[in-house]
Length: 271
Ligand code: HPA
Image (cartoon, rainbow, N blue to C red; front, side, top):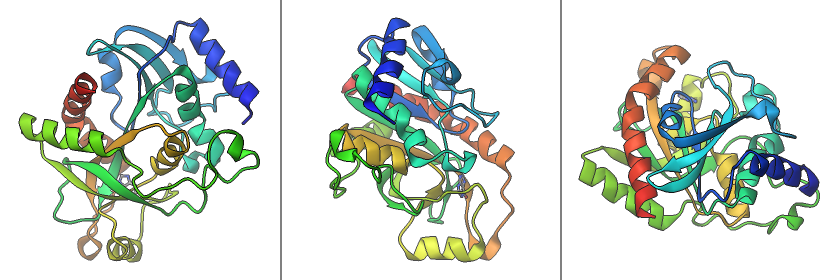
């Protein structure tokens, strides 16, 4: 990644009409529908944007969409890049830096995750209060990082407190159960063993997934306020472990999606 590449990606999108979005939104696995509700949408496929990584996983349609939601200009990532697809930390966080250069002031992230906390049920939403990075690396471990922001980024409060509070209030007023907890990120793509689920519980994780944390680290590097919500798509009980089926994960995420859309729409209104 170089500044020149970021400038070219940004200039391409601006030439397509991606003018001054206020909010960036990352849509996770099974959560792409919010993109269909954008007014006056302009789309850019990832493989047309200069220096963007290429989308590979077939259930991610892989495009950036610009337009209006609740009267605010947004840019939405429909599909994200994962380490398990063979990308590196710089690839998977490149779109966050581009959205920041386009001008976003806030970032909303969604994902599908397994429930480690067995008080939480599949189909419920969980606000990510904090995280544990188990991906064995950092998107800030590269030469020249300090040209883009502090190298030693503080992570005492990685998720924006004000947006977290707003989401809790919105969920309450909409009658949506919004759990809160710690998200642990792993590389994947294999699911966890029973021993790994036991470990995740012991170290304090409430949910586990294969994304989000690198994006959140980069948002903090850019001093970009970020909030993230998981859809809990499976229950990771090591003593009664049912094999996880990716199709089912996508289905459960799809069923919970309207709740996520509602929360994000109202948060856009309120910030
Ligand atoms: N583990 C890791 N990632 C996941 C899971 C899981 O159980 N469910 C959804 N994403």
